[in-house]
Amino acid sequence: MNAVELNKLNFKYKSVQKRTLENVNLIVNQGEILAICGVSGSGKSTLCNCICGLIPNVYEGEYSGEVKIFGQDISLMSRAEIATNIGIIFQNPSTQLFSPTIEDELAFGPENLCVDRNEIAMRIDEILKIINMEEYRYENPNSLSGGQQQLIAIASVLMLNPKIIICDEIMSWIDEGGKEIIKNLLMNLKKQGKTIIIVEHDIENLKIADRVINI
Image (cartoon, rainbow, N blue to C red; front, side, top):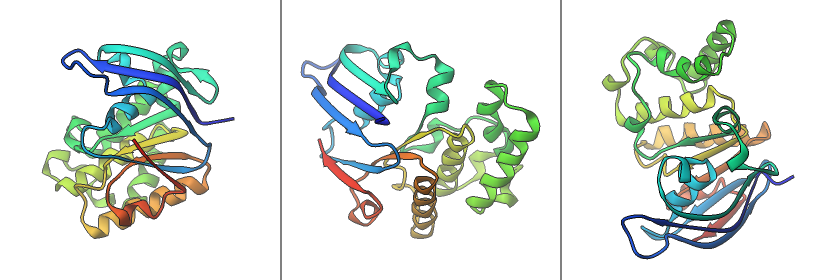
């Protein structure tokens, strides 16, 4: 079964005359790392927002076509189903961080899905170790560098254990050491059977992809 399937997908924002996406057909294989490239304004982020359901649920406009997640039409999925199937990480981490401490930030998503507290604590321990930020557990995210904030934004999405992870230019805020941590993390997630979609322009970061498409 395909992780993602797009059929004749179209979208136009209210404020513009031309469609950002027009008749897009795409299949993302389960367990692959797919990289999406394209010039600025080509619709890469819009495509990601359609795949995760932010379009048309949050961003309004003229929308038509079909988005399927593991064979199910996303329009028929509940918010909880979408959250546990798809996680999206944005270029600017400040759009995703709002809790007073990193521990609270990481616990927020699973708490809202009624995950057991002991399970949440175990996930926090594991994820902070993976991104090498255990010592920052009780820090305010606003006190961190941009790169550190991005690592926490990634960790907050991984706390929900989604099957599909969308990364919208997430390495643009990260130094070289942080980029290596993220790339190794994405490769390990692929080994676990996760499907990864990355929007990227840096050739070095594209090397982890199984397939690269241009839109």
